Amino acid sequence: MASLLQISPSSSLLTSQTTQRTRPRTIFTTTVCRTTSSSSSSSSSSTSRIPMPPLNPRDPFLSKLASVAAANPDHLKASTGSDTPPYLDLFEYPTLMASPAQVERSVSYNEHRPRKPPPDLPSLLLHGRIVYIGMPLVPAVTELVIAELLYLQYMDPKEPIYLYINSTGTTRDDGETVGMESEGFAIYDAMMQLKNEIQTVAVGAAIGQACLLLAAGRKGRRFMLPHAKAMIQQPRVPSSGLMPASDVLIRAKEVVKNRDTLVKLLARHTGNTIETVADVMRRPYYMDSMRAQEFGVIDRVLWRGQEKVMSDATAPEDWDKLAGIKIMQSLLNDVVVSGIEPPCVII
Image (cartoon, rainbow, N blue to C red; front, side):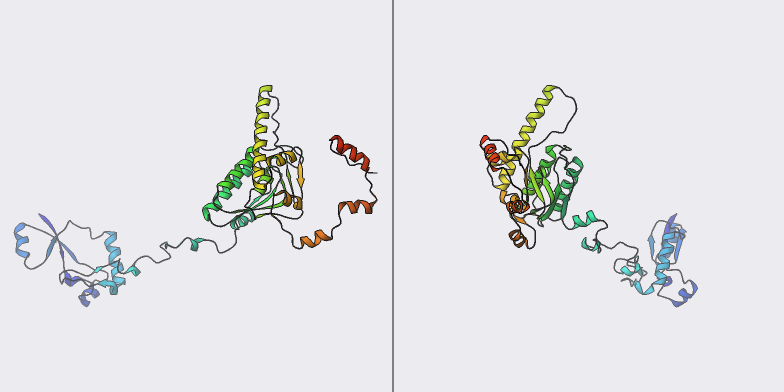
């Protein structure tokens, strides 16, 4: 027994209107013949039989294809041979495919970017390529700052990054140590490795390691607001409770190494000698915006009309005279000669 599929061209959708009225939802009329070899050979001259495996007429794919063909008869492409029925070319006729609403279109990356501002303020600052340090340099802050720097370099390695600083470094306002000096060095090393130009702006305070980050910006692009302050000091070690004397000695040596490293980096970025930086760092060295510019920590003070205001301001000595404050000059001269830091004695 042989299974043969007989395809009749006369039963197609477009060949006969009578067939359409009789079977409006049928594309192909299939006849499965099971004959002997003798009957097969006798009828081969009258009809064209193609050897095919038996097909299920109730196959859902065939019924779906038939419904699509009946609904779109104009998209049936005529065949080249007279003995084959027309077929659906889904590749040449994409209108038979799913609608664009059902298929995800391939679009560029920029079309997916939001057309409205970011949802929160930190995202808005990062969208403007601004990295803001507004807390002491603890591990969580260091991790976030480095991640933002690397992200901005990944987004565009040619655009500048703006680093706004309002931090007390590894200490709090009262001087208590809250972080290791390695936190500031980690951010500094990340800044030096980036391909982007980093512009630094001091807002409020830049103390200790934060002052190093301020000075590490690109030369000519280090700024400071008029009432901000900067301060450099020797590194400090956070308290860790009771420990053996040997551990105290090890920590003391590590603090000295961190101090030497900080002095060398500040000397490199400020243009001063190592001896000058080491001398002023013996005690906390505070600088206002003008003194920070003279010391080489910054390049410009961001204040409109600053020159006129500073020229009209009264000198501190004139304020003392107007207020009737007198300082014992002889006592000050004696203290300076002895090499002791002069106290301020007010009468």
